[in-house]
Length: 296
Ligand SMILES: Cc1cc2nc3c(=O)[nH]c(=O)nc-3n(C[C@H](O)[C@H](O)[C@H](O)COP(=O)(O)OP(=O)(O)OC[C@H]3O[C@@H](n4cnc5c(N)ncnc54)[C@H](O)[C@@H]3O)c2cc1C
Image 1 (cartoon, rainbow, N blue to C red):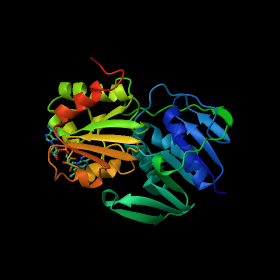
Image 2: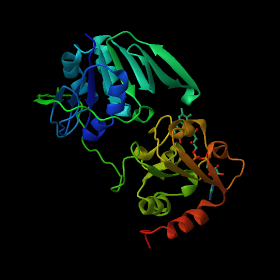
Image 3: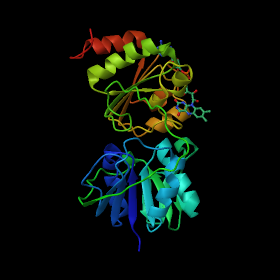
Image 4: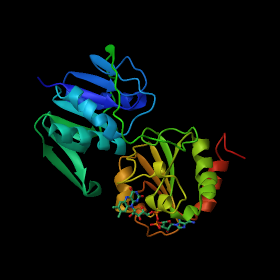
């Protein structure tokens, strides 16, 4: 019988699954690795882990657990792809990453070539899927029975330290407003003052290009794009960002893109809804000063 299992790392991850589960239309359960929830389908298996182990230490255990499901789905992220691929490999199952649409329980749409091509992919169950929540109409998960389950990760690699420099800001993947910056932001302190100040005044998140991450201006977890996070805010402010195809692949579902760039020929202006040809160091502080709650 066809049945979906949603695997979520925490409640926020699980809460992004409703649209996909509804669109797939199969009966479903959820497996929550950490945290608690009373919604997630008929059964909500709760592993209650206080620290998420590395994929290699849990994949084998989860493979034993999930093998009865026809579909196993995760919100797309680097760590979910890592885990899903390992379990699919153990079970010799199909895997589809970054699903953005469903034609039937065996046919999915996914982007290729940084979003330039949308592929229609057939996969016979069992199939492991990672999906982009912003491509599915939001829907609530149904309430179900909580089933505690024990997971004893095998000894192996372990996470020694994990840090996320979100400074209390919304998670990038869920944020409604994102202020994002590129290489011209110079250094970490300038990045935080100029972009962080405006983001805080707007109640938004901060994002960065890979060039900004590679040069140490911004932390890795803020990278937006093909090899970073895929975002879909109502407002995306791109300051000092050229508009490479790899960056655009991560922001094209944004409702309104505002670009600020000194170069009027920068590719970002081809996709921006509002373009400002100016120096970001002039524009951003002026914008920030006009907002209530701006840092002095
Ligand atoms: C396999 C692969 C994967 C990649 N994945 C990603 C990814 O996920 N995300 C990503 O972002 N990139 C990714 N890249 C890198 C991508 O190709 C670009 O190099 C990168 O996006 C450029 O970043 P940038 O816009 O900050 O820098 P630049 O391209 O150097 O552009 C800086 C822009 O700022 C403007 N500028 C300069 N000074 C100012 C100022 N004072 N005020 C206003 N504007 C100013 C310039 O005119 C320029 O347009 C990837 C590349 C590869 C090969």
